[in-house]
Image (cartoon, rainbow over all chains, first blue to last red):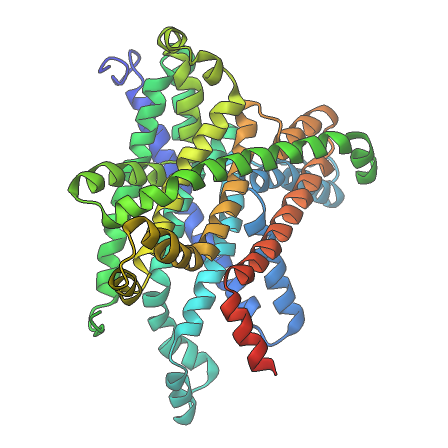
Length: 236
Length: 235
């Protein structure tokens, strides 16, 4: 067993480690993209303009109603197709291959954004409206009210939901192995192909994902306690 | 090819794929639904032994990707072929479809257990005390008071879990099960026509849309007293 996980040419320890790092890198790069899309989606669905609201609804419903794997395929194959058609139109003969990593960031970011939009919308609606009214009463602009009153408090309401989405994102990165990104799942498959030890390597992969998720949950619990400091809660 | 031609030529295969998606989702959710209430009860009211056994199971199922679980069961079982053959279980594990359903059922059991545990803990204490006061036995209490109320509380979350399972069932295509996703991949590989993937998206969105509508309706059927109150309020 130790031999299978040895570093260097003899074992698969270093390959699994690089795979794990790539998994973390993919999740870490996707997170800000997804958060940005989440804010866009929340603003669209709370907009006074019915057309913008419809766009927000369509985005959130399609992304949440479709398998993540299918979204990934559509982005990977369709994104390349659309990009090349566009590039060819601008500069004939030009072509660009969309990489599995980029496809993963876009697809998982789109999915994260759709769910995050719902979380953020809920958080905005949990804010005390009296505070925005107080802001208006002392002559703050809408922008000032957003930056100084709403956004700082949003964190507290959105954190539990966003934490769940982060854990889902970590697990969903495993799907990008299907379009041949050499992350943890893919590296485990490569090791299995040579060693014929599928049970061992997939168990190791599960254990690594599990450790990442449990650690994330522990850190998130700490962050939630910190976000809620100074808030008095009624005892049940 | 024009997107309509793809549908005309490969439509029947997509329909078969739809049947397969509904079968693996339905069976996975149903098997999980048979075990979850008892595990949830155990988790809500059980002692240290119950917690010690259930917590790691639920944590591992929720903390690892379904794809990894599926690979562990499907490819991992191959390593134990002689032992499984000796037990007569090999014909089961040899089929990717069986492995997919098993993985989905195990995974969904963990999620459904946690959802139902929340429902059971949400039943007001007074209802249980009242039932005890009029001398209900434990089984009657569960059947008439605890589970009916727990399911009403848990129903919307259970619906969400089934949708998540339906979306996750597309992973079965990775171990060569021809569900909607599997058919779409096959058609795309043959024709290189992108609309194959878009048709799959349309099918999944239709299924989710129909399911959400039906589930919301069933929520109202489950709570006839709320329906009656709404009617009275309208009048």
